[in-house]
Length: 108
Image (cartoon, rainbow, N blue to C red; front, side, top):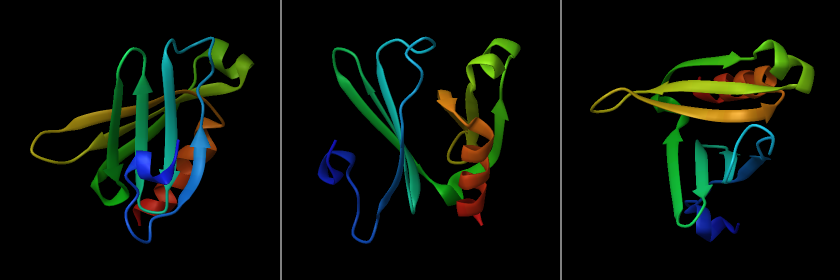
């Protein structure tokens, strides 16, 4: 995935790429964290790219079930403000609590 494919804007830098565990997520999902926003790319037959700037995130939480703790993966769920409340979820990622903390540090 190139910066152009992600629609990175001038001055925006890609900081992290997260690839979900194949055991928990079917299809091709990837998550990108830039210095300005969270980007979710979904590919199966088609392709969809969704993004949200850090200042639009109103609530964030990391979750792990018992089996996810064993596999060292989890989900990060974010409530996004806008015309209506929307939820974005980074599914089955490694180190969900440190990713949550990273996103929180960018929200300020």
